[in-house]
Image 1 (cartoon, protein in one colour):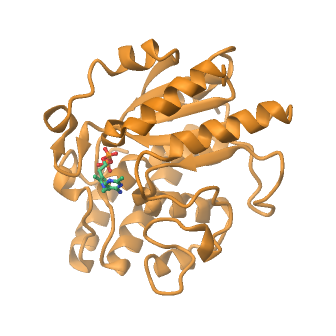
Image 2 (cartoon, helix red, strand yellow; image 1 turned 90 degrees about the vertical axis):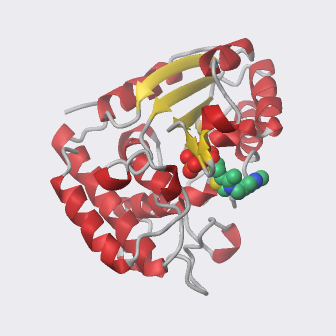
Image 3 (cartoon, rainbow, N blue to C red; image 1 turned 30 degrees about the vertical axis):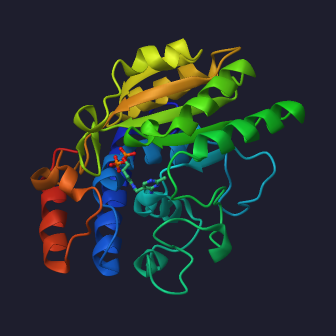
Length: 279
Ligand SMILES: Cc1ncc(C[n+]2csc(CCOP(=O)(O)OP(=O)(O)O)c2C)c(N)n1
């Protein structure tokens, strides 16, 4: 048992099932982003099944923690986790990217999806929104926390660093950002496209508390969030090492799966690989 109240085995199976739903829903949609969606399954499991205060039967609960998913393209893992949390049925996952569905390729509040804080897809905007929400919580003397998720390629957007600067200036210790440090972006390795290292030093120099974790180890992820919650006077960022495509060995670490969905035949093979994986 860990801080989530779930056993390690329960969390392991949950993340695996979320990955399977990511594969199934993407194959049904025929398009979408597979790589980082699979890579983020363990982190989403921890957020929705332990870290965040939220109520699937009351998505607008005023005291809820807010998740700002800046990288809207990983919607398949977001939706699959929300379905497992009870926000909507697992059957609805099969409407991903269909006309009229609440579950659009990039999450949109206009489509009526419950529990969605921000319409997202245009990279670089989420951290600024998270900063605004964290400031509002402080002004209103509310205890809820703000969690944001950034892609590592997304950090090449200048607006991220304006937001980082202001979060430190306003001492937003109710804000925890997480960077999905899979080392990949749409065109290849982040370090080849526009290098980010030394990444921890960059965040530290902007006044943030920096935490490292293995983004596929549930305990490490829980510990990282707990450390962040206990830091006073500054915002925290978790640099989570992940592997794009994690769980499907044949595509792990392959940036060509950043924005591609499996065909129905590939999906069958992926599900078998997932079943065989040591996850
Ligand atoms: C402002 C903006 N520019 C470009 C894109 C297109 N785009 C979508 S995802 C992506 C790569 C982002 O890399 P990263 O954040 O590392 O995500 P990952 O490859 O890990 O999924 C790009 C360039 C976008 N959505 N928004």
